[in-house]
Image (cartoon, rainbow, N blue to C red):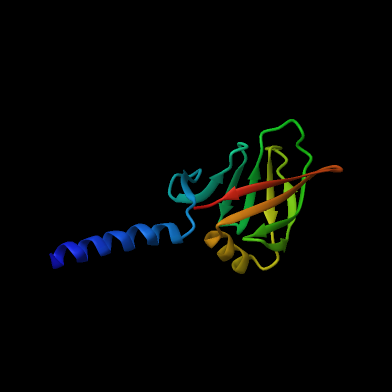
Length: 135
């Protein structure tokens, strides 16, 4: 009986512990020379937008397949806390926008542990918010 109680308690702790941490999906990529395996973390929302956490260059990459490629991102919210950012679109991949921040290490740590990330996206005068739930 004692073993059964300990086993059930261990199972409950394991299951509840997994939901306490933020979960990003992993994507592996091999470098051009093929000697190094890079791991990128990403999350996709219900609108088909993708957010990639690039720990090597210490930035986020916002990907949205649309016809309006000229977008600006000046602020994101990590679990409700606003963070000022700078954005730069990729010239060869116009659907991708790089999001950089001043204090890279601190923001990267917060992003990796975040449960909800909101991105304020501007297309000229139009504004929208993209939400990514990370569980």
